[in-house]
Amino acid sequence: MNTNMLSRMRLSNCVALVLIAAFAVAPLVAHGIGQPFYIVLISRIMIFAIAAIGVNLALGYVGMVSLGHALYIGIGAYAVAISLHSGLANGWAHLLIALAAGGVIAVPIGLVCLRTSGFGFVMITLAFSQMFFYLAVGLRQYGGDEGMPLPSRSAFFPLDAANATTFYYMAFFVLMLVLLLLHRLIHARFGMVIRGCKLNEARMRALGFSTLRHKLVAYVISAEICVLAGVLLANLTRFATPSYLEWIMSGDLVVMTVLGGAGTLIGPLVGATVWVVLEELLASFYIDLPWNLSEFIRSNWTAVLGIVIIVVTLTLKKGLYGFLVARDGGVR
Amino acid sequence: MSMSLIAAQLLNGLQLGILLFLMSAGLTLVMGIMNFANLAHGSLYMIGAYIAAALHAMTGSFVVSAILAVAGTLVVGYLLERLLLSRLYGVEDLYQVLATFGLILVFNQTVKIIWGQAPVFMSTPEFLSGTVTLFGLSYPSYRFAIIVAGLLVGLGLYLAINRTRVGMWIRAGASDREMIAALGVNIRLVNTLVFAIGAALAGFAGVMAGPILSIQPGMGEPILVLVLVVIVTGGIGSIRGAFYGALVVGIVDTIGRAFLPAIMRALLDPEIARGAGPAVASILIYVFMATVLALKPNGLFPAKYR
Image (tube, rainbow over all chains, first blue to last red; front, top):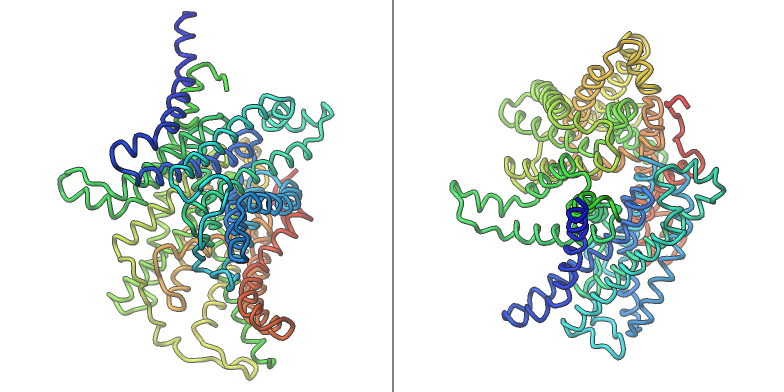
């Protein structure tokens, strides 16, 4: 019984380690099989994973369902784009500007949003991100609704971000950093308080904690993680467009988080991986099926994704990785 | 800008507000009674518009196609609630938001498969293609008909909800579901009814909007976001809130889009104003919503008994 428990204990951890190791060696494999295209694809997965980890801090640990985190991806992306266009090429400066802008915007928005709860919170976060979406559309000098290409990637001296592999490892490093940060955060006293808020906020308040302050800090950190993802995303695609701020993007991030397992450390990483891979697979689906089914799936892949979302929400509430964690006895 | 222009824009705002009210009425009740967040409500609006356009092209009669389209969305709404959404009652908001988000993708793609990616157009019915003169102002009769039809439906809803027994159950359900269930009312059945009627109303809004908008996949989402703004500012579960919220959002949005760019051009550098004007106009209603929620987190007319 006990050994059985132990071997099960390891399963979720094993999956996490294997996944991270796979990310660590992926560029080598991609070069090895002569498919460097995959480096860009997997960079994209990691960037969405970073954003989903940010969303997860608010959604999974505090229970704040935000449909507005695309806003912060947009801030990161536009901070890079606008800086580059005004002649500032230094990537570290871009990072600083993006994080500062993210903080200045996230604190007041968080304060207003946290006055509401439940569905009101979902809607007010959506409202704020819509505001910034239309603002980005209105920025005619920066491409308006079509967005704008970046003249180059940010210059992260002494690293060469223009090199796909170097950029990959920069994203990988940020991903690891964010995972480490979140791990430390949720096991610290702060993490106990915010998880307590999710379970029973009134009780936490009765215990003397300022729940508003803790939730606000969690909201701002989760926003800043998405800002980081935005900086990386603009650099990866060399493009900044209002579609990064669309509410569909926020929805996708929530889907990734829940698909992998909200409230687990590795869940968003699993979710982002599965989601992006699924998108790619369905959009280029070519298995030989009768009745032209293959063609049908390829051209209607968004509907198939929709069905996947519905099935996941109906059957797999804990998410893919969350299911493993729960099997292992709920150790998060 | 002349008075008649302002009056015409006010009527346009009223007309948008009426469409928003038709959409919000059913959804706010479902959200109030079952705490159910249905993002796919905009899809029902889209389905209504598509069915009406297809039938109109086939039969040539606007009235017949409108009635059949409303009946069609009623059936779609009923099946949706029975087969899928009723399984999601009582689970966290999050899963409802997600499942209905998935439904949006499915509906949009289904519509694309049946009718194609390109917009479908629906002509204004013959008998409403002229203009009416109101206090010396000439206004398209079709848009005027939307206002009248919407107000009539609104009046009907008001009477049904405030003067009938089922209406009483609905109101009671929105303020306290458990209590009315304990009193022996089959609130689930009432909710199914409300959902189906709400779907029909959304379909009706789609039919009415059909001739003045282009009918295309994904047309439900922009209006859905407006509808959710209406519901949350009005107060979830409150028909009265939905009515006032819809009018305010419709008028603020229309007036803002019509006049803000011109005002900003007068005040600001024209180059900046050209881009910023429409953007600020789009933002207005979200500012309105954020202000309301910041001051009254439960909306202007909260229905829940607390």
